[in-house]
Amino acid sequence: MSKYLEVIGRKRKWSPVAVDKGTLVEGAEEALYRALALRCLELPVKSFLQEGLEKELPQIPGVVEALMSNQADEDKHDLGLNYVVAAHGSDEKSEREAQRILRTWLDAPEHPILKASILERSVFFVLLPFFRFNGDIGIRTLAADISRDEQTHVAIHGMVCHDLGLKSTQNLNRLRRATVAWVMDPLTRNPENKWLDKDFWIKQSDSLYTRGKAEGLADTQRARMPAFFEASNINLPAYG
Image (tube, rainbow, N blue to C red):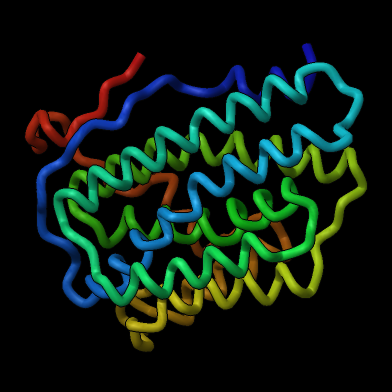
């Protein structure tokens, strides 16, 4: 089987649902609203992939199918995040600033699939664990479902970049770091709780960017997720 088809074969079908408003971790609220404002990057990633589909691609079976599958996921992620915003509301200033960040990503001259790859690996892979450790039940559940999709996205887009010989740039490095730093800026130094320590999250982005992994996020694999009996049915996604 094509390596691309093998990766998308790992996906789990799920559908986002509306959630109700729960309690956020104290001290994380402003940063969470900034992270939610960056949902404006989900559909542009879909557009980046469309641009990539219109360019030269590796002559390997399954590439087009894999990219189109990932495009469909972005619609799901955007819908789920907008359900969260419908429950929690949004911060007007953060929404405006997120639009400026979006414009910078759109204007970056690098290959669109490379931009998608850097965004997902070293920005989204930081925001999703931040949601999981500081959000309420609805946010945590959605972040876990999106994370499973993003694991396949990062693998596929990384393979496409490798097969095309694409390498990151200083511009994208600065941009991804500035994006994460903006989200985490409302936090302080917090040696007693790394999930509320802004330097911790920036370091995880640095590690994901340079090494493709972040040992500091190993707890994500065993993060406590809500049991079905704990949550209202409105907060539980539909699978299959």
